[in-house]
Length: 212
Image (cartoon, rainbow, N blue to C red):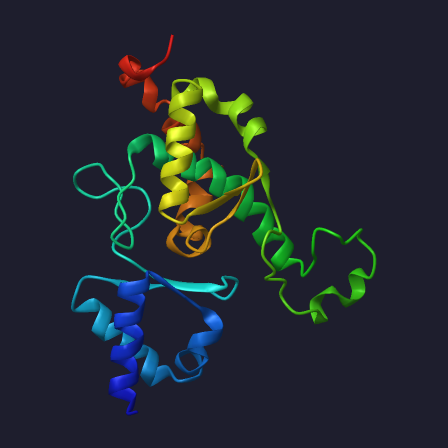
């Protein structure tokens, strides 16, 4: 297979499957010309690679996580409602931010702070489920902001269908798209600057959705 054929295979696979495990794309990360060819192929249909060193998966994205010119969400051909987008931001902040800090410090949830002198020699931890959430705890904290239990779980189901999260036995786990489609550099800074609080005011303009 030529480099051109391989680039087309990767690009078409990403568009069709929406994400591919990093291990299956080792050749792309080792060959700058191949990666450039993949990026050119994606650019012809308005897409770009969504990946970074800490992520297990590679995906594609259209625009950044917050909105398009219609006020909606578009990434990997997936549309989310405004409520689901707000919930996505909360879950991202609660899972990815602490996970990223652990990865930067080369530690796992089981580490107790020992052997700190050797941390920089450890491989970057990428195992699944480094951080998990209890959906009932999340409901208790934020249900009122989302118009009640029914709407909260509707938005949660929306995120699960879009493969941002995985729900299992009352727990919320990171889905394959959570850490690649959301732009860490943009979103983390907005959260630090208080944008999360502004987003959580979305129901102020949609009181008709709020349950009695």
